[in-house]
Length: 117
Image (cartoon, rainbow, N blue to C red; front, side, top):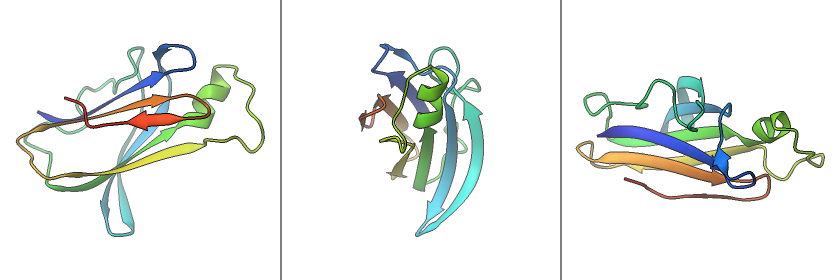
């Protein structure tokens, strides 16, 4: 169970290896940084789960994905200012006995997310 994420680069049809991500806990407008990490070759946290089942708590969270830096690092010519910079996903965990998987499908011009399994 626990919390995980996975990012797929829909422009290139690959995992978003090398993308920087930050995880926060949130309460109202306040956000507290939990960890920063860089996605591995599979587009996932190299350390595995962001929270395991025992550590995940009911509450609200934020994942922030550094989309612009990732695509610039891939050599994509982006306009200035670029359309997407940081993609911030705020979500809630209501049941800590369930797995919360937060995937991101992203290009320089669009993104999509959902609660995965």
